[in-house]
Structures are given as C-alpha cells and as structure tokens.
Length: 115
Length: 109
Image 1 (cartoon, one colour):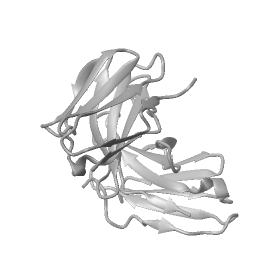
Image 2 (image 1 turned 45 degrees about the vertical axis):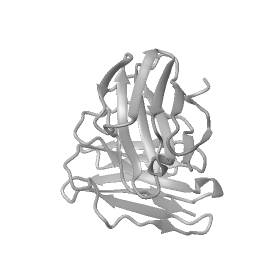
Image 3 (image 1 turned 30 degrees about the vertical axis):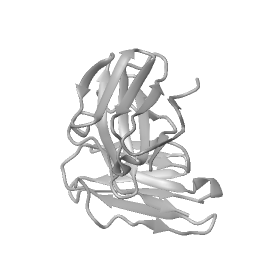
Image 4 (image 1 turned 90 degrees about the horizontal axis):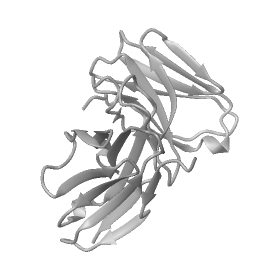
C-alpha cells in the first residue's frame, strides 16, 4: 500500500499563473479530503468528496479555487491566477468512510510557492 | 477559533524523558484526536479518544480527555529521537467526524 500519493511535491508558479495539484487516494477509500497548511493559519480544511461527489467545500476560498474528483483514483485542486498568499502546503487525505471518525490518511503534501 | 490559547508552541526535552502536551478547546466535542506530523510528511493519527473514555493508551502514548474542562492531554513516556515532530490535537467541529479541525500544534524537539 503506497498510501496517499500527491504530485508534484513542490511547485513554483509566478503570480497570476494557474496551479493544478494532484492526489491519488488509497485504493478503496470512498472519502477524499483537501487541507491547506501555513505557518500563520495552521492546518485548515478546504473541501471533501464522498464517492467522487463534492459534499462540503466550506473551507474553499470562493474565488480562484476549485476541486474535482473525476474518478475514484484521483482528485485535483486547481488554483487560478495564483497569488503570493496562496503559498502553502496543500495536503490530501483519504478515508474508508466519512462518518464515525474514521481515520484519515494524509499524503505528504504539495508545497506551492507563488513568486 | 475552536481552540484555546494556552497550547504550548515548542518543547525541548532530552531523550528518555517523559513529556506531556496539553490543549483546550472551546466548542463541545465528544472526540479528540491526536496527530503527529514529522518533517516533510502529512499528519498521522496517533490516538482517538472519546468522551466516555477519559484515558486511552497506545504503546508509549497516553491521551486524556476531560469534557468538563474541555481539555485534553497527550503524554509520551521515554521519548526517543524519532518522536521529534509537531503534535496536534484535533476535533471534528461537530460534523460527525469528517472535518478535522486542528489546533496550532506543539513542536517537540
């Protein structure tokens, strides 16, 4: 079991460019989560999917951020017109279910740097 | 914020010592989770403790939960160099478990 896979591990973009982050959840897991980690804000929930359907995106910035899960083997987080304040580590996690406090398994994260 | 402000930011200890980290939360919860994050890795759950358990052990780890004071602690006995990490307490923000709301973390050096 390779765990949750995130690619790329590091991404550097220029201000105004688009960034797409990829996540491959653990096979068989039905729930996929995205979090963002910064020094100032800490770890913040962004959004999650259940069986590929978006369920809660309450943590997503309303503009420029979008997440999709086109199939059960991967999810993407897209940031349009990146800004320096988007610089963070973006973490993906998956779980066998989204209820009953099932353990979430985190990937190593993608460090996004916006210049 | 879900969390109180008395969470310690960093602890520096000698290998072999015991250490206890504390956190307090503002919003009622029936579950507290403790996570560990090593450098370059994502967080990994260590212990999940429910309100009816008060104390839970896993190897060298011991977690407590006091719902009356809305506080939790994580103790590590006989720390090892491999315990160097940031430790987070977390709750679910009343979502029934899917949304993990992390505290600010304690860095153990």
